Length: 110
Length: 113
Image (cartoon, rainbow over all chains, first blue to last red; front, side):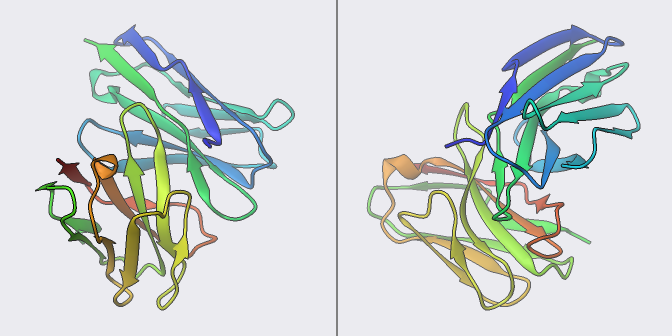
């Protein structure tokens, strides 16, 4: 069964707007990671947040983690057409396996 | 540095045929992984190799076998392909099993008729 579930499944915004994607998970985690996948390509690691962290930034990316609610969010600020991709959260559990969610498909309209 | 490479990029098989998907990494990583990705679903782990000489089952291992040929190479074999194995297969590697960032190959799109 899937550990992470993203919401929404699809998101369409105008260039320059912010995009927010959410991830909920079921059991305790060591860390939570976000990956990006361009159409027809492999996944690329974006950012990792550990279970004892609440917020992390990397460029235009901001990730938050709320372990009490078992949820995380990824915010992409000032979106660009090149941000169009699918975004996946992945939860690292105590067994050290990485479980991926079903993804959010983001479309940024120029 | 090529990173993680996979061959072939595309493959069509008939039910019952066998094939091996190849994966190689040039980052001197200890751990390697095989995932499958089906439409509308995230990646699911098939098998992994935490270090050279070891392999372990992931979430969906049935119908597959793997070989960690050396530190660089990790192959996935389908002995008797079934239509349910139609999917996109991704290989990934990481510095070690407990270390966190995985690097992915471009994928192999497999269709089983």
